[in-house]
Length: 356
Ligand SMILES: CC(=O)SCCNC(=O)CCNC(=O)[C@H](O)C(C)(C)COP(=O)(O)OP(=O)(O)OC[C@H]1O[C@@H](n2cnc3c(N)ncnc32)[C@H](O)[C@@H]1OP(=O)(O)O
Ligand SMILES: CC(=O)C(=O)O
Ligand SMILES: [Mg+2]
Image (cartoon, rainbow, N blue to C red; front, side):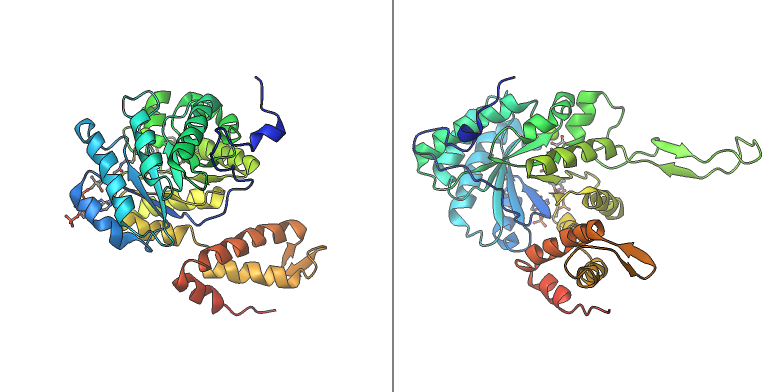
């Protein structure tokens, strides 16, 4: 396939559109909180959620009734115009590119509230051609609406073809901000035999070998993570492209314990955040996607012990070197970014005392 020349990659795609960013800023986005702007109860809660969550996302796609699509779009315009989002980002999830609503979603949102929108989440992305389409259209609409900074694109990985193309999707445009796993649509598209929105399945397991040949005896069972392969592939694609990977929805709102486990697996594998579908998932996401005090204490201790950052030292019986230092710096830098917007975390991290 043909690629753009490097000099053209960062050129605006329409006369009058803002120049693309050279680097995607590492803005905290531990929880991307979904709300339906056509639901008056949810919409009414949005202004008070500013500052309590890193990202508020007005959802226009699945979970919004077909009859409410226009009300959701107009509701989002109204909320965006009347709310001061302060440190909280405003994102939207537009309808899918083959739907009858998406063109008007983009035209309306970019021309009416383009200066307030940080990121447009595109569902059911199949390949880089979907990103190229949105990229050009956004540039034309930014120019038309006089939008001063480029609106970024976030892709949902929720088709088998999208997973196969994830690296090309991640590299498709300088607007690419990140990618989220879409476990529900992805499961359906792959014909997985699951019925849940994210999370595990008790049937997906490995079993301890039989003891003394007793296959019916008491054998420990370990449930496996259905999403490990896809998340790991997505994390690599995002890291290569310099953009950010996210888990996605965890549909069992009542099972806050399993949600926390799923989120933590994603955090450990490299994701920077997840989705929140219900207010009670925000606190879980904020906690899980913020490094723990113990991790920061250890990381700072390694940084201090490593001096100029080269060589090997022994700390508590463990070898630390240039590479373990780099891992520690990932945590220290994340803590700094989060402390800059979260005063409670700042207090916690500032109070850490490091031993030698
Ligand atoms: C596979 C995918 O595409 S996932 C992404 C698409 N899905 C979504 O966006 C779903 C978003 N969330 C929701 O629609 C709702 O949370 C539901 C349907 C799951 C549950 O809603 P409810 O049954 O109303 O939950 P519950 O009764 O616990 O809500 C408590 C309160 O929180 C409000 N609330 C619930 N979810 C949200 C939300 N996401 N944002 C803001 N407020 C919310 C409710 O309106 C209710 O308000 P009230 O106290 O004034 O009555
Ligand atoms: C996230 C999403 O849209 C899905 O799981 O289908
Ligand atoms: Mg979906």
